[in-house]
Amino acid sequence: MPETVGVLSLQGDFERHLVALDRIGVPGREVRTVADLDECSRLIIPGGESTTLGILLRRCGLDQAIPERARAGMPIWGTCMGLILLAKEVEGSDQWTLGLLDVTVRRNAFGRQVYSFETDLTIRGLERPFHAVFIRAPIVTRLGVGVEPIAEHEGKVVAVRSGKMLGTAFHPELTEDSRVHELFLNL
Ligand code: GLN
Image (cartoon, rainbow, N blue to C red; front, side, top):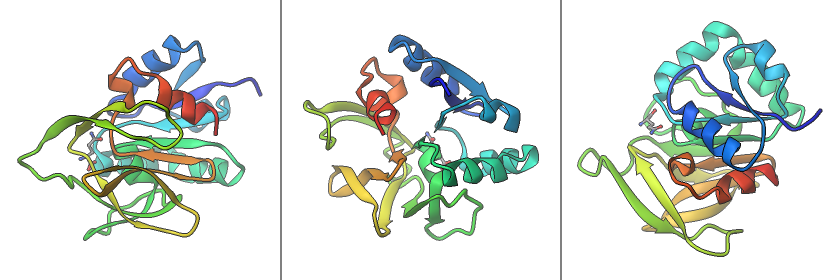
């Protein structure tokens, strides 16, 4: 299949991911149905509201289709809410997730005071620091077997990789720097 990167577009910050893909010349596609997903070789789950998206996914059957594609080897990247949706466990909550990445996350982990912030992050695999935008971001509080932390902020894990899964607590689609998109395309 020729490379087409699906961006889950039921809710949230999907448009900026499509713009970022366009900037690096990779075909992107909005994913709203199982049929859309079938046209894609990779999937990005953007930022948004994880409880809302969970409900929408179950309504259109993507709650089953995404794990099936993941088991068949499809690379998946979750940014912010996307990371929460991929996680096996959400701290202090029994909210529904896809459970594809063996980590525990803490939602809104930087507190209500620090609603959002920007910082230069060192990310394993990238030569220069990456300017990262955090918006009500989660952190990873438990790493399962085979999950590699690839970035930390103030000692907290904010990016992970496991096989063909990538999770970032920040929003690379909100800056002009395409290096994390490229990192995903190289998984
Ligand atoms: N706080 C949101 C959630 O818990 C995630 C925020 C985001 O994706 N920017 O779902």
